[in-house]
Length: 78
Image (cartoon, rainbow, N blue to C red; front, side, top):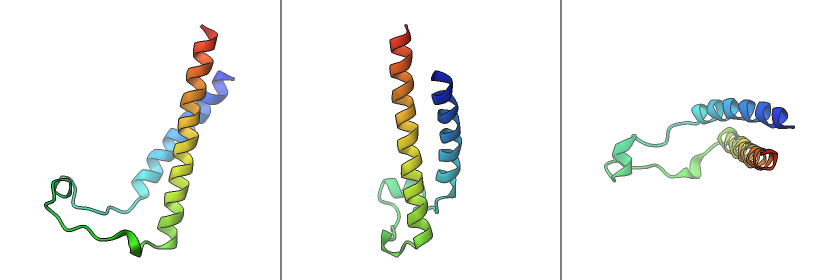
């Protein structure tokens, strides 16, 4: 059971990295964090971007569930 969750964790981690890198940049980097840039609104996002957001959130939930499951399984085993 631990091996199954470990493999699923590795696959979801790699997929999550890929999905985050596929997202379109929305700001100018660190300058936007401190109010140095003008940000555009999120209202103009396309269907593909919204689907990418949904897939990314779903993958993140699977990743989180794997982390919790592995923690509980390893705690119960020791």
